[in-house]
Amino acid sequence: MGTKEDVLNKIQILITNHFKTPEEAFAFFDKDGDGKLTKGEITELLKKAEISGFIRGIVSSKLVEGYDKSKDELIDWEEFKMAIAKIK
Image (cartoon, rainbow, N blue to C red; front, side, top):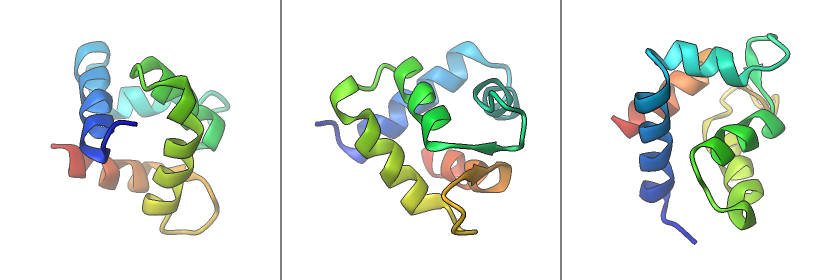
């Protein structure tokens, strides 16, 4: 399994190489347009970031657990920005 740094690095590469801004990446993965990423939407982001299928579910749960400050089991834009800030 990759380290936290490996996972965050792959997410950074995805955002940098495929989107003009983090906002564009967030909007792309927010499939229902509700302003929040579900675990399923986060899993899709991890898939695009080439995170191993075996660990995607675990990593998406850990990302929600680590950055979901509102405790709604979703990642909103502010929480996403905090996660992105850790990458940079």
